[in-house]
Image (cartoon, rainbow, N blue to C red; front, side, top):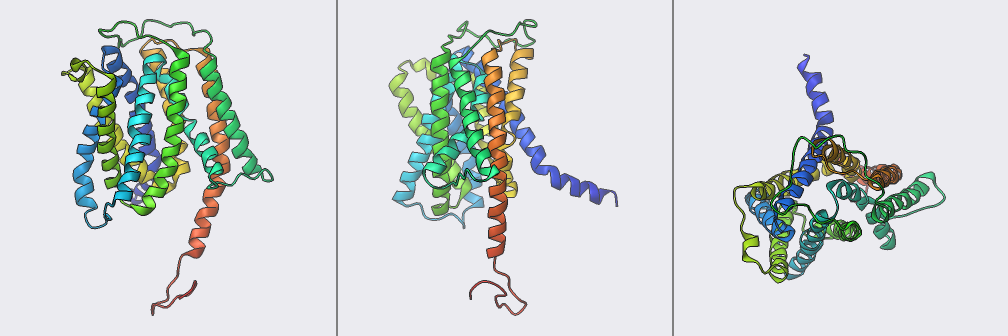
Length: 356
């Protein structure tokens, strides 16, 4: 009898546990990717290889699980997938991971929290979102968006002094290239640009899913097309053939980890949690990776932690939760509206509500 309540508790908190594990996975992705870049791997080569791996891993699942439900791939839908791949994979991630060479994992993890605010602004412009100044929830969304952007400006324009080092770190990630060149403003602007394109990708993805409602197949296509786009870009900017060669070292492990765990497993986990609990629930866990990355980078890797990143990160998280508090009411109203419109049938198959 005791097993039944335990099973109920597990199923109730299963989405929470999965999202915590997903954020832990993202934390290690930041660290292992920076270690690979310090070792000398080209960020564009990393993006290309990572999404080739992700596409090949997702391909059998998409083929067999959506074989009957997958709609026909028309030219118009493929063009949308091409643009989605550009926004969600090749363009965005090339800017995103290139910025890691100039900044730090802590800054990148903080900046990701602004995607919700940027998406909200774009949704208001496109009239997909309502921002009413007459309600506390509406004001919370507007103020939260402004506060988050203020936090981004703080992290971008103010680096500040570094906290006192507590030691040399338990793990060293410096590789053959020596000290990584830092250009804080350039890296910050690249990160902001990647977050903007990511926000556009989220909005466009919602439209594409209505015409191509096959999430696994869409994910596979975006990975493979994005990998091809990234490869074309890399061939133009990187003329050294040796940049494409990776051995059994940190470069290979970071590529496999990013492709299989992040672009494969974590993406599936987030889609499942989003279906069960909604997008607001998934976004609530983003600040967890920010805290984990900052702690791991400072205490374990012995990296510098700047006061500007700390202040800006705290401001971004405050603004994020104000925005999410306002959005939570919208999600509740949407679900109530959908439930009220759902048709109810009698035992003889006739409508009890709605129109026949």
